[in-house]
Length: 258
Ligand SMILES: [Zn+2]
Image (cartoon, rainbow, N blue to C red; front, side, top):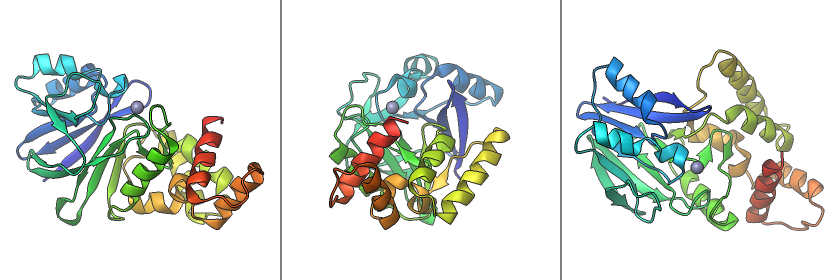
């Protein structure tokens, strides 16, 4: 039995808390305080931390949690500049943590050290993808190249469609309002946007989504769609016969400037 819950941190981060019969782990604890108060309230202790990438809002709580929880295993990317990782992971690694079989997928672009944790989980798959794939969007490209981010998202889009997608931030509403600019006629997107407004008005997280919903509504996975290509070409008249990578790049640049 696996239970996954969000712990809110800062203004829009989610620290994912995973409980199994064997113990408890958190994903990307940017802040120790909300995790510690959850553990105290529920009389629990932490045994593992998973880190997707080095940014402070995903790692800032690791030191404090390591001090207050003995023998904590901190799993994260092997090439990270964050120095709090004691179990290093690389692309293709398969590890069992608290009874969950995870496959590691390297997804550089947002940062160079970014990894995602995928669990097949007997046909109920889930993914922790940090700041690479967001609900309705994708991460900004800070360290890598557009090509790397494009490739990373392509890898994630090959996972099973019923994969639950747990990303690191509640950015969905602004992502979907951008998506509507480039994919106006998409009925599923319009419904998702309405659902998202309602959820946020009631302070309900919009995460997780599913990979299927992302494939249907996330423009950064839909660069092969004719209407999106036409919209991008209209906005960028220097693009004559763009390939999917160029469409992706133009989408990302547009979003960066909105
Ligand atoms: Zn980040």
